[in-house]
Amino acid sequence: MAQKETCNCLHLPLETVDNIREIMPPEDALYDLADFFKVFADSTRIKMLYTLFYSEMCVCDLALMLSMSQSAISHQLRTLKQMNLVRNRREGKTVFYSLADDHIKSILNQGMEHIEE
Image (cartoon, rainbow, N blue to C red; front, side, top):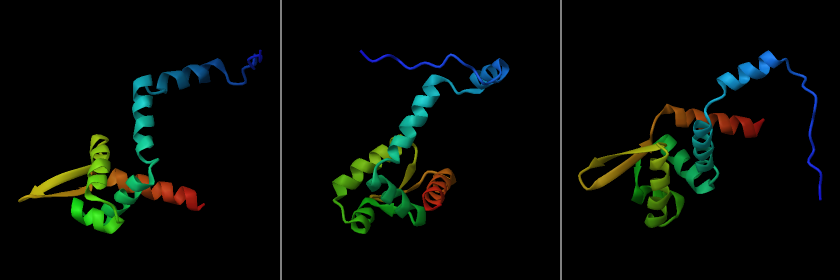
């Protein structure tokens, strides 16, 4: 049986440990943040977000842009809407999708900057 590795030394002052524990977000907020970032783990959703970065589009336009079926686009849009990454507006019978806010653009830009370093 493998022995669990432990460290019995503490290099940080206890005050620092206590301060970090006080400002650490609650566990449920950390789970929500992890779920938020999981949405970005799918390249199809990233392509959709990048497309909506430049222009609002209906499902048909997104399907054409990304060479995907409308049902596949709708499925991914549902996930993006649930995570408040996209919003929609109706114009007659057509529903147009766009990024929910400028935070999404910032996240995409910062992610791209990070991987290009």
